[in-house]
Every structure is written in C-alpha cells, then in structure tokens.
Length: 85
Image 1: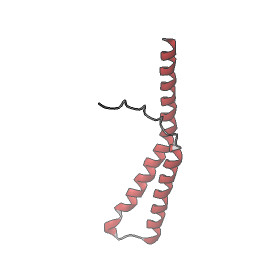
Image 2 (image 1 turned 90 degrees about the vertical axis):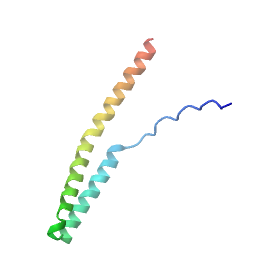
Image 3 (image 1 turned 135 degrees about the vertical axis):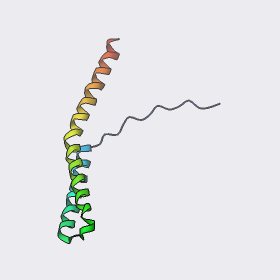
Image 4 (image 1 turned 120 degrees about the horizontal axis):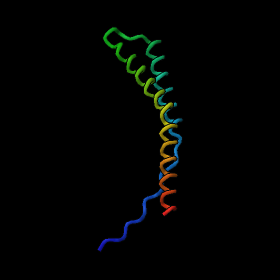
C-alpha cells in the first residue's frame, strides 16, 4: 500500500534578469581578458564565442521580463476562469 502523494511545493521566486545580467557580464569580462591577452590566430574563434554569449545574454535580458509578464497574464486568466466557474 502506498502513501498518498504530497502536493508539489510552489515554484521558487527568482530574479532571472539578474542571473542573465551576471552571465552576460561574465562573457564580457572573458572577451576583454582574451583581447588583452591576445590569442594565436588558430584560437581567434574564442572571441566569437564570447560575442555570441554576450548577444544571447542581451536577448535574455530583453526577453525574460516579457516571458514572465505573459506567464502572469496566463495564470491570472486561468484563475479567473476557475473562479467564474
């Protein structure tokens, strides 16, 4: 005989934009370090890895608030449908 399953805990609230900013800053620091140190011509692709990381991070900083707002609207609409019956 199995015990009844306990309900799932609510999702943790996090500041996802701050995480994206920190990651973007880390890629920017890595780019600056690579530019200062200098790379052999065979390893120049690392610069583009850093640039891609910065670009993806900037996209995340722009996109995350929109995603969270859409999820909040969807949750509010779901709650409204449930209370309306």
